[in-house]
Amino acid sequence: MTSAGSGHTGGVDRPPWSDRRRRTLLGLALGIVAFGLGAIALPDQYGLTSLFLAALCAFLVVCAAVAFVAIPGPDTFRTLLRTVPLAGAVLVVAVLLLLSTSADLRWLWSLAAVAAAAWTAFAVWDTRRAGD
Image 1: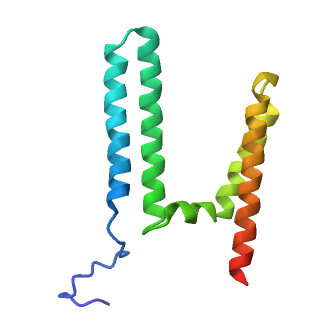
Image 2 (image 1 turned 180 degrees about the horizontal axis):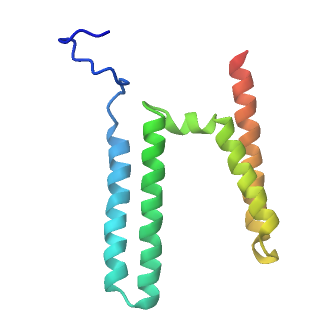
């Protein structure tokens, strides 16, 4: 139990976000606005591309916010790099995309699957090494 004057609300104490995290989210939000305006103002083919880029920025802002909330503090990239379940999930998706794509894009998904396999192997190796 906490005392009434302690100022503790019972939630999780998280360090404040760094300027880099704030700038990342702000930059992506500005990308959403700029590309969204471009989707409205530009002719058809360019407007559609601009709309796609605005949607990509929106997706990335959600992904970044989830990562920043899930991994408080510094070294977010290194923590994600060592996360075996995330690496394994990326490997599964890359292999499924490799198996379901046509021959003209197979090289791209082959590279993605090889990179994901290397990431998974590194994450498992680093986790095992850190456990010793």
